[in-house]
Length: 110
Length: 116
Image 1 (cartoon, rainbow over the protein chains, first blue to last red):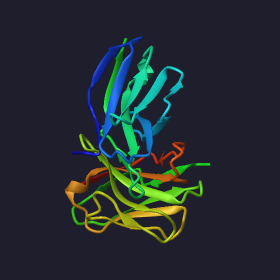
Image 2: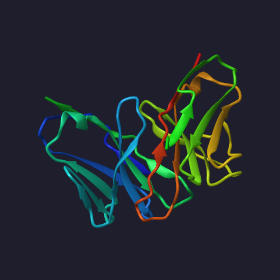
Image 3: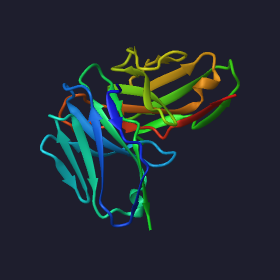
Protein backbone atom coordinates (compact mmCIF):
# COMPACT_ATOMS: atom_id res chain seq x y z
CA UNK A 1 0.00 0.00 0.00
CA UNK A 2 1.35 3.41 -0.95
CA UNK A 3 1.94 5.77 1.92
CA UNK A 4 -0.22 8.50 0.43
CA UNK A 5 -3.21 7.80 -1.80
CA UNK A 6 -5.46 10.09 -3.76
CA UNK A 7 -8.29 9.61 -6.21
CA UNK A 8 -6.71 10.64 -9.52
CA UNK A 9 -10.00 11.94 -10.91
CA UNK A 10 -10.48 13.81 -13.12
CA UNK A 11 -13.08 15.82 -11.31
CA UNK A 12 -15.07 17.84 -13.85
CA UNK A 13 -17.13 20.55 -12.19
CA UNK A 14 -18.94 23.66 -13.43
CA UNK A 15 -17.88 27.12 -12.38
CA UNK A 16 -19.28 28.03 -9.01
CA UNK A 17 -19.50 24.46 -7.78
CA UNK A 18 -18.06 23.15 -4.54
CA UNK A 19 -15.65 20.24 -4.84
CA UNK A 20 -13.82 18.20 -2.25
CA UNK A 21 -10.79 15.93 -2.44
CA UNK A 22 -9.61 13.43 0.11
CA UNK A 23 -6.19 11.98 0.64
CA UNK A 24 -5.40 9.01 2.89
CA UNK A 25 -2.07 8.25 4.49
CA UNK A 26 -0.84 5.01 5.98
CA UNK A 27 1.69 6.11 8.59
CA UNK A 28 -0.05 7.08 11.81
CA UNK A 29 3.14 8.83 12.96
CA UNK A 30 2.90 11.37 10.13
CA UNK A 31 3.53 14.87 11.38
CA UNK A 32 2.98 17.46 8.67
CA UNK A 33 0.46 17.70 5.90
CA UNK A 34 0.21 19.91 2.86
CA UNK A 35 -1.74 20.51 -0.32
CA UNK A 36 0.25 21.53 -3.37
CA UNK A 37 -1.11 22.71 -6.67
CA UNK A 38 0.52 21.78 -9.96
CA UNK A 39 -0.46 23.39 -13.25
CA UNK A 40 0.15 21.55 -16.50
CA UNK A 41 3.87 21.31 -17.27
CA UNK A 42 4.77 23.47 -14.27
CA UNK A 43 6.34 22.84 -10.90
CA UNK A 44 4.24 22.10 -7.80
CA UNK A 45 3.55 25.07 -5.58
CA UNK A 46 2.27 25.14 -2.03
CA UNK A 47 -1.46 25.76 -1.81
CA UNK A 48 -1.79 25.40 1.92
CA UNK A 49 -0.51 23.60 4.95
CA UNK A 50 -2.99 21.49 6.88
CA UNK A 51 -3.16 22.06 10.61
CA UNK A 52 -4.72 19.83 13.22
CA UNK A 53 -7.46 22.35 13.87
CA UNK A 54 -8.21 22.77 10.19
CA UNK A 55 -7.57 25.94 8.29
CA UNK A 56 -9.17 28.14 5.69
CA UNK A 57 -7.74 30.43 3.06
CA UNK A 58 -10.39 32.24 1.09
CA UNK A 59 -12.34 29.67 -0.91
CA UNK A 60 -10.09 26.82 0.23
CA UNK A 61 -10.53 24.80 3.41
CA UNK A 62 -8.24 22.02 4.56
CA UNK A 63 -9.05 19.48 7.26
CA UNK A 64 -7.06 16.79 9.01
CA UNK A 65 -8.62 13.67 10.48
CA UNK A 66 -5.93 11.82 12.41
CA UNK A 67 -8.25 9.09 13.63
CA UNK A 68 -9.15 8.05 10.10
CA UNK A 69 -5.80 9.15 8.67
CA UNK A 70 -6.96 11.41 5.93
CA UNK A 71 -6.79 15.03 4.92
CA UNK A 72 -9.27 16.87 2.80
CA UNK A 73 -9.38 19.93 0.59
CA UNK A 74 -12.62 21.77 -0.07
CA UNK A 75 -12.87 24.36 -2.83
CA UNK A 76 -15.92 26.59 -2.83
CA UNK A 77 -17.19 28.70 -5.72
CA UNK A 78 -14.83 27.02 -8.19
CA UNK A 79 -13.13 29.22 -10.77
CA UNK A 80 -11.80 28.28 -14.18
CA UNK A 81 -8.35 29.12 -12.83
CA UNK A 82 -8.68 26.39 -10.20
CA UNK A 83 -8.18 23.79 -12.94
CA UNK A 84 -4.99 21.98 -11.98
CA UNK A 85 -3.69 18.87 -10.29
CA UNK A 86 -3.78 18.91 -6.50
CA UNK A 87 -1.06 16.99 -4.72
CA UNK A 88 -1.37 15.71 -1.19
CA UNK A 89 1.95 15.73 0.67
CA UNK A 90 2.65 14.05 3.98
CA UNK A 91 5.75 14.12 6.13
CA UNK A 92 5.88 10.62 7.52
CA UNK A 93 8.43 11.60 10.10
CA UNK A 94 10.88 8.94 8.93
CA UNK A 95 13.97 10.44 7.41
CA UNK A 96 13.91 13.59 5.39
CA UNK A 97 11.55 12.69 2.59
CA UNK A 98 8.07 14.03 2.07
CA UNK A 99 5.62 11.57 0.57
CA UNK A 100 3.58 12.75 -2.37
CA UNK A 101 0.27 11.45 -3.56
CA UNK A 102 -0.09 11.02 -7.30
CA UNK A 103 -2.43 13.97 -7.47
CA UNK A 104 -6.08 14.65 -8.18
CA UNK A 105 -6.94 16.35 -11.45
CA UNK A 106 -9.57 19.08 -11.37
CA UNK A 107 -11.16 20.62 -14.43
CA UNK A 108 -13.53 23.52 -13.92
CA UNK A 109 -15.73 24.17 -16.93
CA UNK A 110 -17.70 27.28 -17.96
CA UNK B 1 16.01 36.25 -5.26
CA UNK B 2 15.61 33.55 -7.90
CA UNK B 3 14.60 30.73 -5.54
CA UNK B 4 15.46 27.39 -7.12
CA UNK B 5 16.96 27.38 -10.60
CA UNK B 6 17.39 24.27 -12.73
CA UNK B 7 19.51 23.96 -15.83
CA UNK B 8 19.04 22.87 -18.51
CA UNK B 9 15.28 23.14 -18.97
CA UNK B 10 15.24 20.73 -21.89
CA UNK B 11 17.66 18.10 -23.13
CA UNK B 12 17.60 15.25 -25.60
CA UNK B 13 20.13 12.48 -25.13
CA UNK B 14 21.01 9.30 -26.92
CA UNK B 15 21.13 6.05 -25.00
CA UNK B 16 24.46 5.70 -23.24
CA UNK B 17 25.29 9.39 -23.14
CA UNK B 18 25.97 11.13 -19.88
CA UNK B 19 24.80 14.45 -18.57
CA UNK B 20 24.44 16.50 -15.42
CA UNK B 21 21.46 18.50 -14.23
CA UNK B 22 22.26 21.47 -12.04
CA UNK B 23 20.08 22.77 -9.27
CA UNK B 24 20.98 26.05 -7.59
CA UNK B 25 19.17 27.74 -4.72
CA UNK B 26 19.86 31.13 -3.23
CA UNK B 27 17.78 30.76 -0.08
CA UNK B 28 20.50 29.20 2.09
CA UNK B 29 18.40 26.03 2.42
CA UNK B 30 20.00 23.03 4.05
CA UNK B 31 17.93 20.32 2.44
CA UNK B 32 17.74 19.68 -1.29
CA UNK B 33 15.96 17.01 -3.30
CA UNK B 34 15.79 15.57 -6.78
CA UNK B 35 12.47 14.13 -7.93
CA UNK B 36 11.31 12.66 -11.17
CA UNK B 37 7.72 12.88 -12.36
CA UNK B 38 6.21 10.48 -14.83
CA UNK B 39 2.61 10.19 -16.04
CA UNK B 40 0.56 8.17 -13.61
CA UNK B 41 3.48 7.78 -11.20
CA UNK B 42 3.47 11.05 -9.33
CA UNK B 43 6.65 12.54 -7.90
CA UNK B 44 9.30 10.04 -6.89
CA UNK B 45 12.37 10.91 -4.86
CA UNK B 46 15.68 10.04 -6.52
CA UNK B 47 18.28 11.40 -4.09
CA UNK B 48 18.39 14.04 -1.41
CA UNK B 49 20.89 15.97 0.65
CA UNK B 50 20.62 17.24 4.20
CA UNK B 51 23.60 19.54 3.93
CA UNK B 52 26.78 20.39 2.12
CA UNK B 53 28.87 17.30 1.48
CA UNK B 54 26.06 14.85 2.26
CA UNK B 55 23.79 12.83 -0.03
CA UNK B 56 21.38 9.95 0.44
CA UNK B 57 19.31 7.63 -1.71
CA UNK B 58 15.63 8.12 -2.20
CA UNK B 59 12.99 5.83 -3.66
CA UNK B 60 14.43 5.44 -7.19
CA UNK B 61 18.21 6.09 -7.05
CA UNK B 62 19.43 3.52 -9.58
CA UNK B 63 21.12 5.01 -12.63
CA UNK B 64 21.70 8.37 -10.97
CA UNK B 65 24.46 9.96 -8.94
CA UNK B 66 24.45 13.22 -7.03
CA UNK B 67 26.86 15.62 -5.44
CA UNK B 68 26.51 18.53 -3.03
CA UNK B 69 29.92 20.14 -2.96
CA UNK B 70 28.48 23.57 -2.21
CA UNK B 71 25.46 24.28 -0.09
CA UNK B 72 23.67 26.14 -2.84
CA UNK B 73 24.16 23.52 -5.57
CA UNK B 74 22.84 19.98 -5.95
CA UNK B 75 23.91 18.12 -9.07
CA UNK B 76 22.15 15.10 -10.56
CA UNK B 77 24.19 12.98 -12.94
CA UNK B 78 23.22 10.31 -15.42
CA UNK B 79 26.31 8.30 -16.26
CA UNK B 80 24.77 6.21 -19.03
CA UNK B 81 21.32 7.43 -19.99
CA UNK B 82 18.56 4.93 -20.72
CA UNK B 83 15.14 5.51 -22.33
CA UNK B 84 13.55 4.67 -18.95
CA UNK B 85 15.09 7.87 -17.64
CA UNK B 86 12.98 9.97 -19.96
CA UNK B 87 11.10 12.12 -17.49
CA UNK B 88 10.60 15.53 -15.98
CA UNK B 89 13.06 16.19 -13.20
CA UNK B 90 12.31 18.59 -10.38
CA UNK B 91 14.72 19.92 -7.84
CA UNK B 92 13.41 21.25 -4.55
CA UNK B 93 14.79 22.72 -1.37
CA UNK B 94 13.61 23.37 2.15
CA UNK B 95 15.11 25.16 5.09
CA UNK B 96 13.71 23.52 8.15
CA UNK B 97 12.25 20.14 8.83
CA UNK B 98 10.48 20.84 12.06
CA UNK B 99 6.89 19.75 12.33
CA UNK B 100 5.39 23.18 12.59
CA UNK B 101 3.61 22.65 9.32
CA UNK B 102 5.08 25.84 8.01
CA UNK B 103 8.01 24.31 6.16
CA UNK B 104 7.55 24.63 2.46
CA UNK B 105 9.28 22.88 -0.37
CA UNK B 106 10.32 25.28 -3.10
CA UNK B 107 10.58 23.65 -6.50
CA UNK B 108 12.56 24.55 -9.56
CA UNK B 109 10.74 24.90 -12.86
CA UNK B 110 11.74 21.41 -13.98
CA UNK B 111 14.05 19.85 -16.53
CA UNK B 112 12.53 17.81 -19.33
CA UNK B 113 14.83 15.02 -20.40
CA UNK B 114 14.26 12.73 -23.36
CA UNK B 115 16.50 9.73 -23.93
CA UNK B 116 16.30 8.22 -27.40
